[in-house]
Length: 236
Image (cartoon, rainbow, N blue to C red; front, side, top):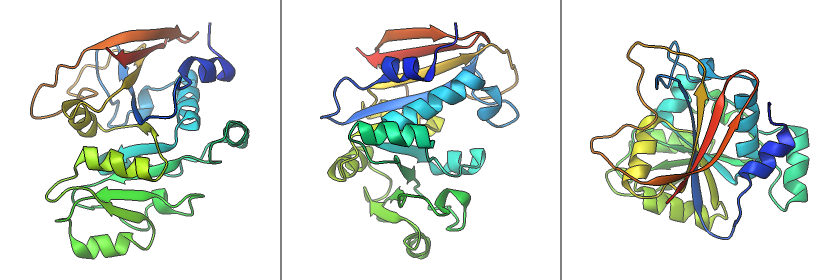
C-alpha cells in the first residue's frame, strides 16, 4: 500500500534535532544502477518523488556535490506551500537551505540552482580553489572555505552546525557519499529500490578510492503500489 505524505513525515522524522545528523538519500535499480540514461531521476516514481520532498521538508540543509548539480540539472529545492506551512508549525525555517560542495568551483553563477532562491545558497570549497571563480560565486552564494587543498567534510559539517543547520540531507553524488562514509560522518541512509533492471555500466550509490565498510542496521522498510521499496538504514 502506498504511504501517504503524513505517513512518510512520521516514518522519517528526526527523533533528536539537537545534534548534527547526516542523512543520505539515493535511488537505484534492482540490479544496483544509480542512473538510467545518465540521470537518477529517470529511475523514480511518484512515491519516490514524494519521499524526496518529505526528506527535504524535514531537513535544515540539502547538501549536494557540484557534479550532481550539473548532471541532474538542479534548480530550486524549495518545498511546497503545504510543506512550508508544516515547517513553520514545527519551528523550522520556511525553506531548507542548499549547500553545494565543490573542489574546483566549476559552477556558473547563472545556473538555475542560484536563480532567485528564497534562501541564499552556500558553496563549500577549499583555500586553493580558483580565486576568480570564488569571487564570481560570492555574488550569488555564501562561499565558505573548509580545508586547504580539498574540502574537509568535518569542517564543512562544523560550519553548517554553526549556521544552525544541523539536520543534513545529502543527495549525492556517489563520490561525496563515499567521502562522507570514509570520514565516518553518515548517520542514516535512505535507499529507494526501483522495480527495474538496467544493466549497462551505471555506477553505485557510493564511490571512492578506498573501501569504507561501515555497518548499518535496517531501521524501516516501506513499499508502494508500483513495486518500489524504500529502505532506511541507521548507523549501528
